[in-house]
Amino acid sequence: MNICLFTPDELNQPLVKKDERNQHIVKVLHKKAGDSFDAGVIGGMAGIATITDISPEGNIQFSFEPKSAGKKLYPLTMIIGFPRPIQLRRLLRDMAGLGVTKIILSGTELTEKSYLNSNVVKDGSAFRMLLEGTAQAASTHVPQLVTAASLRQAIQMVREEQDASPAGCDSSLIALDNVRAGQSLHEFLQKEGSHSAVAAIGSERGWTDKERDLLQNAGFSLCSMGCRVLRTETAATVAASLILDSMGFLG
Image (cartoon, rainbow, N blue to C red; front, side):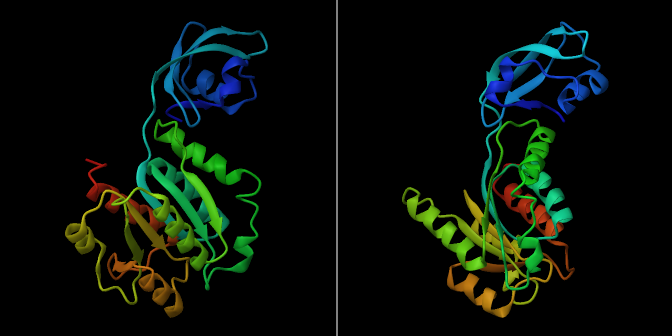
């Protein structure tokens, strides 16, 4: 936790002792009354919080001084085939840490159907993982998370978003695949270059031929990242890193 994140309402309330942020400030950062720590508003300003008092019960009173608009998210949308819930938690932390703008969790033809019924998104666990990754990156802006029942629906979401964008702002469309890829991701990025991108990563059993056809017909370029078969969360993290680096954001 490299920044403590708060909702706007929490800025005016004491941080109770049982709150994990309180524990981090006192036990990890070893802060006391009069000390300051990095803080920010979720989706808003980043700045400095100063501890004005710690009550006998251990509750922290603090003031907040905004300093900046916070780190911007990068123009990368990730379509990701719904992985196992335990993998999803790691994946969301990493995507938020890297600063992607949007994550579309998509059902695919080979997705285990029980994963789609997971409560990870419904019960708020997914958002907490995004917050954790955002705090790790010392950022305040959290990626948008949406779900799609199928790859077709996910592609439609992307198409609608592009249609609503200003003329000339089309994103590069990339689908990672180790069966029918026509080029490597490295070659594509060197050749194409882009100010924004959408990258699609299959679920743990990859794409079907029908989905490959669907992606190509929608304008996605099928690209590989070598001959090794990677876990969904590993492929997503590596692909996002390579794409963001090609855009100049990791320099």
